[in-house]
Every structure is written in structure tokens, then in C-alpha cells.
Image (cartoon, rainbow, N blue to C red; front, top):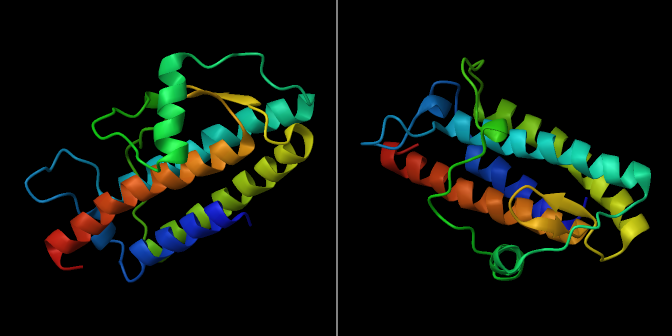
Length: 175
């Protein structure tokens, strides 16, 4: 597995370790409408599941997108993929928001699901890198066209952003 996705898998596993199914339903203290730990993980899984088909479609066609990034997209790409900073306060697109009802799962079960999805993401980005090298090949809904390495880096930075939230919830409840 690519080093960025391996790091993400390790960080997710560590953040969820030791949580039972009841613990994963915890939300930030004072913010009951915010996502629970499980909902945050479901959101991450949804982002991997929505990225893989888009990446696969381009890889299967062996044809990079012709889209050109706007200045705003270039700034977002730089902020996330180069500086490693994910903006706060963005509302997740509906397609990747967690849906209810959820089957309640433990931290270990959630980590296993994340691992399986990251393996799929790793396989398709490796294939894409073989065909496209470091060229921008597949457009992201917000950031515009990204290279395979930028896709991996996006998912790492996005995941670390949400893992901070999970660690905050754990700290709030002494989990």
C-alpha cells in the first residue's frame, strides 16, 4: 500500500482502537446534532467509495480528463495536497454524508471496513499512476483535476482532519 494510504489506515485504526459499539455513537459534548464517531467514519468510507468508481472509469478509459483547474481549485489543491491543511466548516456533499439508520459497529469493525476501502483506493490509484504518471487525470468535485498522488494526499489530509474530531470526542468522554 502507498505510504500515504498506509499512514491513513494506521491512524484510523489507532483512533478507533478499543471503542465498543456504544462508544462509536458518541457525539461532541454540547453538539448533539454533530456526527458521531461512527458517522464520521461512515463519511470517510463514503468518500473512498465515491472516489474509486470515478478513478476506475478514467483508468479503464486510459484517458485523462481534459478539465483545467481554476485558480480557486489550484489554491485548494495547494492548501490540501501541499500544505496538508483541510479547511474547517465545509459541509459534506450529500453523496458522501453518512445516512441513517446505521448498523451500530465497534471501532475494530469500522477500522476493518476502512482498511478494505483503502485497499481498493490504493489499487486503483496505483493503476492510474501507471497510465498517467504524475499528470492530473481525474477531476474531484471541488478541487478539480488531480493526479493519483494528489488523490491519495487528499484522502490522507481529509482523513486526518476527521480523525482530530474523533480524538476530540474520545477526549470529551474519556474514551
